[in-house]
Amino acid sequence: MELTKQQLKELLPKNTYIDQWHNALSQLLPDYEINTPQRIASFIAQCAHESGGFIFLTENLNYKAASLRKIFGKYFPDDATAAAYEKKPEKIANKIYANRMGNGDELSGDGYKYRGRGLIQLTGKTNYTWFAASLEISAEEAAEYTQTFEGAAQSACWFWETNKLNQYADSGDILTMTKRINGGTIGLEDRKKHYAHALHVLGVH
Picture 1 (spheres, rainbow, N blue to C red):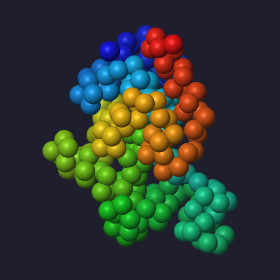
Picture 2: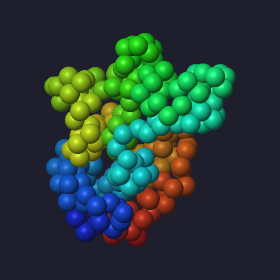
Picture 3: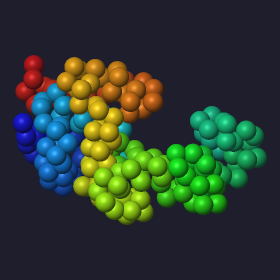
Protein backbone atom coordinates (compact mmCIF):
# COMPACT_ATOMS: atom_id res chain seq x y z
CA MET A 1 0.00 0.00 0.00
CA GLU A 2 1.04 3.61 -0.46
CA LEU A 3 0.89 6.27 2.21
CA THR A 4 -1.03 9.29 0.91
CA LYS A 5 -0.14 12.88 1.68
CA GLN A 6 -3.49 13.37 3.40
CA GLN A 7 -2.88 10.37 5.67
CA LEU A 8 0.55 11.67 6.59
CA LYS A 9 -0.96 15.08 7.40
CA GLU A 10 -3.37 13.40 9.82
CA LEU A 11 -0.53 11.42 11.39
CA LEU A 12 1.75 14.45 11.83
CA PRO A 13 -0.69 17.30 12.54
CA LYS A 14 1.95 19.70 13.92
CA ASN A 15 4.45 19.20 11.14
CA THR A 16 4.81 21.91 8.49
CA TYR A 17 6.96 19.85 6.11
CA ILE A 18 4.41 17.27 4.98
CA ASP A 19 5.35 17.59 1.28
CA GLN A 20 9.02 16.92 1.97
CA TRP A 21 8.36 14.00 4.32
CA HIS A 22 5.81 12.50 1.95
CA ASN A 23 8.26 12.69 -0.97
CA ALA A 24 10.98 11.00 1.08
CA LEU A 25 8.75 8.27 2.52
CA SER A 26 7.05 7.52 -0.80
CA GLN A 27 10.43 6.70 -2.31
CA LEU A 28 11.99 4.94 0.68
CA LEU A 29 9.31 2.83 2.37
CA PRO A 30 8.80 0.46 -0.61
CA ASP A 31 12.59 -0.04 -0.89
CA TYR A 32 12.70 -1.35 2.66
CA GLU A 33 9.48 -3.39 2.31
CA ILE A 34 7.63 -1.16 4.77
CA ASN A 35 4.62 -1.70 2.55
CA THR A 36 1.61 -2.98 4.51
CA PRO A 37 -0.72 -0.97 6.77
CA GLN A 38 0.74 -2.69 9.87
CA ARG A 39 4.33 -2.03 8.83
CA ILE A 40 3.71 1.58 7.84
CA ALA A 41 1.70 2.24 11.02
CA SER A 42 4.46 0.73 13.17
CA PHE A 43 7.20 2.69 11.42
CA ILE A 44 5.37 6.03 11.55
CA ALA A 45 4.34 5.46 15.20
CA GLN A 46 7.87 4.66 16.38
CA CYS A 47 9.46 7.47 14.38
CA ALA A 48 6.81 9.97 15.50
CA HIS A 49 7.54 9.14 19.13
CA GLU A 50 11.31 9.26 18.67
CA SER A 51 11.30 12.58 16.78
CA GLY A 52 8.41 14.46 18.38
CA GLY A 53 6.26 14.10 15.28
CA PHE A 54 9.11 14.17 12.71
CA ILE A 55 10.28 17.53 14.11
CA PHE A 56 13.44 16.85 16.18
CA LEU A 57 16.05 15.29 13.92
CA THR A 58 19.20 15.91 15.96
CA GLU A 59 19.80 14.86 19.55
CA ASN A 60 19.44 17.79 21.93
CA LEU A 61 22.28 17.69 24.44
CA ASN A 62 21.86 21.19 25.89
CA TYR A 63 21.62 19.98 29.49
CA LYS A 64 21.81 21.92 32.74
CA ALA A 65 24.19 20.66 35.42
CA ALA A 66 21.40 19.10 37.52
CA SER A 67 20.15 17.12 34.53
CA LEU A 68 23.65 15.91 33.71
CA ARG A 69 24.03 14.61 37.27
CA LYS A 70 20.64 12.91 37.10
CA ILE A 71 20.78 11.41 33.59
CA PHE A 72 24.51 10.84 33.12
CA GLY A 73 25.68 10.48 36.72
CA LYS A 74 28.30 7.95 35.68
CA TYR A 75 30.08 10.62 33.63
CA PHE A 76 29.35 13.55 35.96
CA PRO A 77 29.94 12.18 39.46
CA ASP A 78 30.07 15.58 41.20
CA ASP A 79 28.60 19.08 40.85
CA ALA A 80 31.88 20.67 39.78
CA THR A 81 32.29 18.34 36.79
CA ALA A 82 28.66 18.83 35.78
CA ALA A 83 28.98 22.62 36.06
CA ALA A 84 31.99 22.62 33.72
CA TYR A 85 29.90 20.94 31.00
CA GLU A 86 26.54 22.64 31.63
CA LYS A 87 24.78 23.81 28.44
CA LYS A 88 27.76 22.87 26.24
CA PRO A 89 26.24 20.26 23.89
CA GLU A 90 29.44 19.58 21.96
CA LYS A 91 31.51 18.98 25.10
CA ILE A 92 28.72 16.86 26.63
CA ALA A 93 28.43 14.64 23.54
CA ASN A 94 32.18 14.18 23.30
CA LYS A 95 32.31 13.09 26.95
CA ILE A 96 29.30 10.75 27.19
CA TYR A 97 29.94 9.04 23.85
CA ALA A 98 33.74 8.77 24.11
CA ASN A 99 35.39 5.37 23.62
CA ARG A 100 32.21 3.49 22.77
CA MET A 101 30.05 2.71 19.74
CA GLY A 102 33.15 3.01 17.56
CA ASN A 103 33.95 6.54 18.74
CA GLY A 104 37.43 7.75 19.67
CA ASP A 105 38.27 9.47 22.95
CA GLU A 106 36.80 12.73 24.19
CA LEU A 107 39.31 14.85 22.24
CA SER A 108 38.53 13.09 18.94
CA GLY A 109 35.22 14.95 18.64
CA ASP A 110 33.51 11.76 17.45
CA GLY A 111 30.87 11.94 20.19
CA TYR A 112 29.45 15.16 18.80
CA LYS A 113 30.10 14.35 15.14
CA TYR A 114 28.22 11.06 15.49
CA ARG A 115 25.56 12.13 17.98
CA GLY A 116 21.97 10.97 17.51
CA ARG A 117 20.39 12.03 14.22
CA GLY A 118 17.49 11.01 12.02
CA LEU A 119 13.93 9.87 12.75
CA ILE A 120 15.28 7.01 14.88
CA GLN A 121 18.38 8.53 16.42
CA LEU A 122 21.36 6.90 14.74
CA THR A 123 24.22 7.22 17.27
CA GLY A 124 27.93 6.37 17.29
CA LYS A 125 30.55 6.07 14.57
CA THR A 126 29.98 2.32 14.17
CA ASN A 127 26.29 2.79 13.30
CA TYR A 128 27.06 5.68 10.94
CA THR A 129 29.77 3.56 9.27
CA TRP A 130 27.37 0.65 8.71
CA PHE A 131 24.64 2.95 7.42
CA ALA A 132 27.17 4.68 5.16
CA ALA A 133 28.35 1.33 3.80
CA SER A 134 24.79 0.48 2.75
CA LEU A 135 24.83 3.66 0.60
CA GLU A 136 28.50 3.39 -0.44
CA ILE A 137 29.41 6.75 1.12
CA SER A 138 31.69 7.75 4.04
CA ALA A 139 30.58 7.98 7.67
CA GLU A 140 31.15 11.75 7.51
CA GLU A 141 28.90 12.02 4.46
CA ALA A 142 26.29 9.88 6.21
CA ALA A 143 26.34 12.27 9.19
CA GLU A 144 25.52 15.16 6.84
CA TYR A 145 22.93 13.14 4.93
CA THR A 146 20.98 12.31 8.10
CA GLN A 147 20.25 16.03 8.50
CA THR A 148 18.18 16.06 5.29
CA PHE A 149 14.57 14.82 5.01
CA GLU A 150 15.63 11.86 2.88
CA GLY A 151 18.61 11.02 5.07
CA ALA A 152 16.67 11.28 8.32
CA ALA A 153 14.05 8.92 6.90
CA GLN A 154 16.51 6.55 5.22
CA SER A 155 18.64 6.13 8.33
CA ALA A 156 15.47 5.10 10.16
CA CYS A 157 14.50 2.70 7.36
CA TRP A 158 18.01 1.23 7.43
CA PHE A 159 17.83 0.79 11.22
CA TRP A 160 14.39 -0.80 10.79
CA GLU A 161 15.65 -3.31 8.23
CA THR A 162 18.90 -4.06 10.10
CA ASN A 163 16.95 -4.86 13.28
CA LYS A 164 14.36 -6.91 11.36
CA LEU A 165 11.50 -4.81 12.73
CA ASN A 166 9.04 -5.70 9.95
CA GLN A 167 8.50 -9.11 11.56
CA TYR A 168 7.39 -7.45 14.82
CA ALA A 169 5.22 -5.02 12.88
CA ASP A 170 3.54 -7.99 11.18
CA SER A 171 2.63 -9.49 14.55
CA GLY A 172 1.79 -6.14 16.17
CA ASP A 173 4.50 -6.65 18.80
CA ILE A 174 5.02 -3.03 19.88
CA LEU A 175 6.87 -4.07 23.05
CA THR A 176 9.71 -5.95 21.30
CA MET A 177 9.90 -3.27 18.63
CA THR A 178 10.27 -0.56 21.29
CA LYS A 179 13.00 -2.52 23.10
CA ARG A 180 14.93 -2.91 19.84
CA ILE A 181 14.71 0.84 19.16
CA ASN A 182 14.97 2.27 22.65
CA GLY A 183 16.94 -0.36 24.53
CA GLY A 184 14.10 -0.31 27.07
CA THR A 185 10.43 0.58 27.18
CA ILE A 186 10.55 4.37 27.49
CA GLY A 187 7.44 5.97 26.00
CA LEU A 188 5.68 2.65 25.41
CA GLU A 189 2.18 4.03 26.01
CA ASP A 190 2.78 6.99 23.70
CA ARG A 191 4.08 4.64 21.00
CA LYS A 192 0.97 2.46 21.37
CA LYS A 193 -1.23 5.54 21.07
CA HIS A 194 0.56 6.64 17.88
CA TYR A 195 0.24 3.08 16.52
CA ALA A 196 -3.51 2.83 17.17
CA HIS A 197 -4.04 6.24 15.56
CA ALA A 198 -1.92 5.27 12.54
CA LEU A 199 -3.85 2.03 11.99
CA HIS A 200 -7.09 4.02 12.13
CA VAL A 201 -5.82 6.62 9.62
CA LEU A 202 -4.61 3.85 7.31
CA GLY A 203 -8.04 2.25 7.39
CA VAL A 204 -7.36 -0.76 9.60
CA HIS A 205 -10.09 -1.18 12.18
